[in-house]
Amino acid sequence: MAATCVLTAGQAWAFDEAAADRALQFAREQLARTSTSPDIPPHQYPKNTVDNRTWKLVAADNRVDWIQGFYPGLLWYMYEAEEDPVWRERADARTRPTEVQKTNTQTHDLGFKFFPSFGNAYRLTGEAYYRDVLLTAAGSLAQRFHAPSGVINCCDWNREWKVPLVTDTMMNLELLFWAAENGGDPAWKDMALSHALVTLRDMVRPDGGTFHVVDYDAAGNIRSRETFQGHSDPSTWSRGHAWAIYGFTLAYRYTKDPRMLEAAIKVTDYYLDRLPPDSVPYWDMDAPADQRVKDSSAAAVVASALLELHTFVTDAAVKERYHSAALAMLDSLSSSAYLAAGTQSPGILLHGVAFYRTPIKPKGEAIDESLIYGDYYFVEALLRFKQSLAVPLPAPGPPPTTPQPPAPGGAGEGGCASAAPGSTMAAAGLLLWLLATRRKHA
Image (cartoon, rainbow, N blue to C red):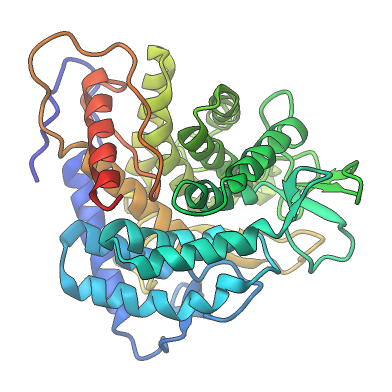
């Protein structure tokens, strides 16, 4: 697929369509190998590698774990990239076993469990079966809304918490936003926006950093602000912050509420100001020198988010900064430093951190391993970048000065590529693609 954005004078990007193609080809090879492996039974799902050699697996019906949607989501992305029915068959076969989770009311993670899998399935096929499962799952998630605090209650497994709010839940809101617009209860949109606004008020610090956990009592009063996976309560856990960047971006896409865009910009600027030179963060933005282990999964999440967020921003300098940052992240992640090519890992990205060693979990979990969710958002970012190049050039004439945001619905897509970051034409092309893909199966 040839690039169609006009190249203008300015910075030449190391990350380009050829680099994206190489990374996607490697992803395709890894996923083909995993999908035909006899070591992965039909009702088991990859979570992270063990010693960068084999996958740790999670059962489809595990109600507490949160990762079952990402592997089928990756298979759906392969189908989207190639339109090969083999990938559709593989994706569908791995999607259907997780339907058992649709009535799970024990967790906030139904968005993670269902939107990468059933959400992409419905977007790409239009089959009512996938839509119906999504609506049932959204209804289950809505049952966790705690009206006095205005948030989705994270979970029940930690008895020290009463009504916990975690940054991760920002990603699960898409299930409610989408469902409210596709046959579900319109009140679900209000719940999701309420949760996002409370997250902004109570979890985002004045400097743009984020707490990981805010706990409330039954009346909605704050009991504590703390961390569960970060270095310390006042630090900023990198992947949790990545969830905030992506989550506020998708909240703006669905609501067009300017407070969501302002929040996305605030948390993004904090993150970008604290990145190391290769644009891949340490597992915690405040990790001490002897704990500076990279987390590629956080970089993948943010790269994908910025390829959408920069299309919403009207300030040219900010737009350019975000687009430039996304390409720098993809450039690093696609390099030999992070891509698993030439290693024994069955994953796509190396150097992910699921849970670093902390007093809560002294041995940690999956440190410096491939993570299925890091792979998912990396491939999503590559496809967003690729699709932004596939839109024909606009007719001659003055370009629009303020690109309109994408139409809501479907899995979040975004991206832009041009030799000049923040190009209005490239952003307009991206938006045309977003509208086209979402209308395809509306």
